[in-house]
Image (cartoon, rainbow, N blue to C red; front, side, top):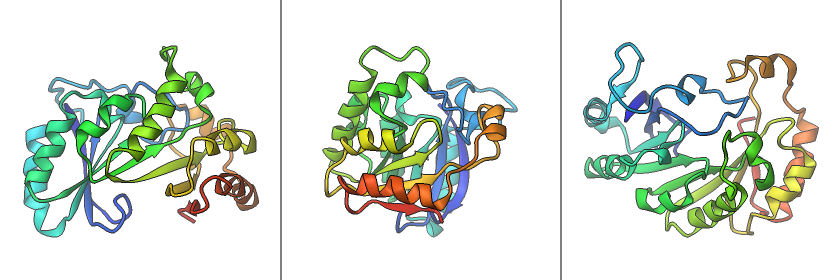
Length: 234
């Protein structure tokens, strides 16, 4: 497993000063992804010059930074594609730090095994449309996403669901379907699609973020199922 490292974040792990470890590789190809350098990079091996670190190097860095950290976020890419993920999380915990997992839910059966203290799952669109973002998606892709939502809720960790309001994938129609996945006690955060560097460069050129009024309409739909839902980042 190869890892990118962000030494300090005040926003990625609620209530904690955290470092962020970015795993390489992801089965999804979301055109608006803002970590394109991690999507198709080799997941394994020791590729010099890729800007990534080994697990051993990352853990040594975390141990050095431990005096100023209280948590570590394992993000990506998609962390659950890596069989070594539970071992990485356990190693971080042995350093006395809390672990947050960011996931897209593609492997629901692997979420609980990480033993994270906090889990954030992205809800990309209605489950039936995941095949548009997941090349070679299995026939049960929609069911996997529904199962992942339940797995996050049943993991014993503090959790949240995140909805990036990316035009073409999250409109009022998709919000109705996403809301059916949610329950009243769920913590849900909607965030604006951010233009700029994206996996599909054409996406940034042709797609504009929703204005505030549109986001408020989508939020109102989500709140019918999850009253605590709110907008994040603006």
